[in-house]
Length: 117
Image (cartoon, rainbow, N blue to C red; front, side):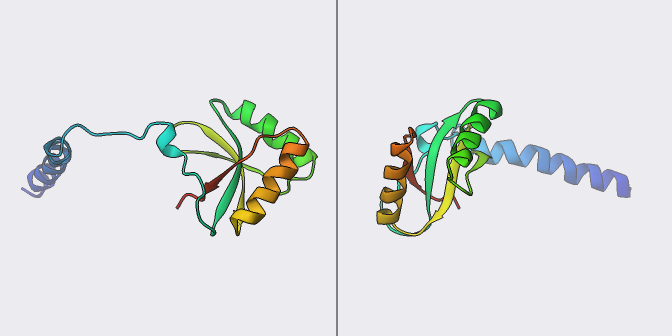
């Protein structure tokens, strides 16, 4: 009897999720543009060196950024299936713009984004 109850609970969960999801329309997933949140206010800002489809391509950009002194440059997969190369923890837009200018002077096009989270 206990096993039957366990299987009924599992079946209810398995059926409840799609029914609940579809009751609100088809599930939606963010577009690549929706995964980018441009920085518009001071606060936790990331300087983004770019988005890449492969980790090896992103690692190449990260390594080049580290070589020229952008300490803290890291890779991370975002929710849209791309690898982001960025430095986090920039406190203000003014500091972010200075960072972007410095990056531009050595060949990078950096954008400023609100940190995820």
